[in-house]
Structure formats: structure tokens, C-alpha cells
Image 1 (cartoon, rainbow, N blue to C red):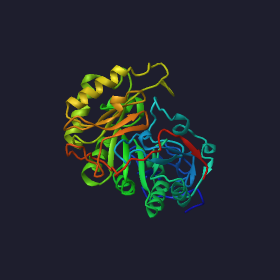
Image 2 (image 1 turned 180 degrees about the horizontal axis):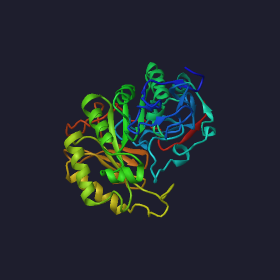
Image 3 (image 1 turned 135 degrees about the vertical axis):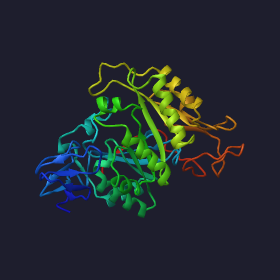
Image 4 (image 1 turned 30 degrees about the vertical axis):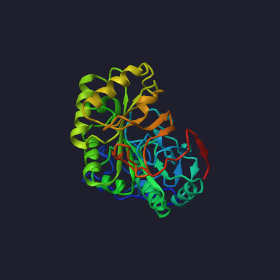
Length: 356
């Protein structure tokens, strides 16, 4: 540890020309002394790469777990959410741009140690803590220590991430996580390059790693942007890849785009597009395909893929009918995949900002 909020890191190496390369994500920023990476919070200081935001957050809020979104992970329960500043992608359509694009340390006004976060989650009855708002891979050391503190109190951890993380750091980060929502932004490298400043292949590698090498519960989210990633061809290819590589039971959330950040000229996603995407995914064998950012009780609810019965009714983030027994099974005997307890939580749609 260099200071209270600046800590040493291990995912970097020295280059022959004197620069140091950060190896946390596939951007591989090569830094001279005093420079920051694109993510803003990892920097070169005193001939090493340090995290400059340890113990500092852009704020804390208790949300419904369904807001992450996670529909098959402790349904109905509250999750304590927090993030920092910066991001390792530069998405022009970012919905959290005030935090992810921040280059001001003043954004990180709330301070809390990992132990303080775990204590707050326990005190408020949260079943999990989520690293979210901006991508947690860039504050890996803070997230990992927070996860350890949470696990000591039997509180689970959730990562909401684009999955744009390099090998080595990938294994370390996800070994501390119980569930993840991976933002699969599109299914073409052109989209990732032009609109996000990244690449698709590392994200696919993260998804394959999580499915084949870990016990992390994963769900996917794709924000459908009119004219950019919503063609039948792309949706066919993406959902076929998901079925073949991740299986039929990985939940997929199609969410509606709203004009934001540097894409104010784009229209909002029509509900018909979400319905079309959901049909394509289901026709390709995916069992749990959801719609989000719109009011769609059918597309937001969970249905038994065997008998068609309603298993978990959702109205926005509020749970309604619960069609599972104490073992998480439908009356037909089908067991719902996920982390499902005998009884759902009753947090509802409350949003509760807190200070720690």
C-alpha cells in the first residue's frame, strides 16, 4: 500500500523502452511516469502501476437485485451497489457517463473500507454487494478485498461488467465473485471498435471462461441501439453463439436504448425491436430471454421452458406470482437454473441511497 487510497497492483510489466504496460485489460496501456491509463484510476507512480481510488466510491445505494439485472440470483432481495470513477471502454452510448467518464477525483466523494461496506450490507439486510455503475475490473484490488470482507459475513458479491479483462486478471477477479451480469454490447468487432473503443473477442473469451471454468452465475445484457446492433442477422448470430457456447439456460436481457452521452441523435429503441430480439433468441433455443428498460410484464417474467407455466412474475422490479416450490422447482418438476432460495425476497422496487 502506497497511501490510504493509492495501492500497489500486480498486473503490469516493464517494457524495454522504459514505459510500463498495465495488464489488467486488453487495452494494455503503456505509461510513462505520472501518466494515467484510459480508465483514469490506474496510473504509473514511482515506477509501478497503482490503483488511485482504493476505498473511494461515487456513492452507495441499495437496489433490487433485478435492477443489475439479475433475474435468477436471489430474486426479490436487496443488493448494496457501488462504483468508482472511470472505465476501460469509451462507449458513446454510456448510460452511466457521469461516473464512467469522470476525470475528477471529486466524483469519489464517499470513502469506505471493504470492511465498512460489508458491515453496511449486513446492517441493512442486503444479501449481496454489487460492483457496478462503472466497470469494476479497473478497481480490481478494491473489489477483491470488498468481496473477501463480504464473504466473511456470508454476503455474496456481484459484478456488473463488460467482461473486457485480460487473462490472469480475469481469473483473479472472478474468483471473488458469486454472480455476474456481462454486458455483451454487440456481436461485431466493428461495433466494439467504433462505438466502445474495444474489441469483441476478449469479451467472448471471458464468457467462455466463466461458463467452463467457474461456478459464477452469469446473465447477459445487450442494449439494443437502433441501426447499430439490432439487425436480424446480428441477433441470429449472437444468440446462436450463446446457445452453442454457454447453453440454453443463461439468461439474456435485451434492454431499450435511451439517447445519452454522445449518441443523443439516436431514437429510443421501439418495444417492437425488443419483442423481435426476444423471439429470435427463443427460436434459437434460449430458455430465459428478458426485456428491460420498458414496461413489459410478459418479457420481464420467468416462464417454465418445459410446461410454459409462469414461475416468477415481475412488474418492473416488483415480484408478483411465485410459481416455484421450496426446492426451486415448477409443478411439472422442472428446476429453475440459478441461485434460487426457498422463498423470494420482498425488497420490491425501492432505491435507498446510503452513506457508509
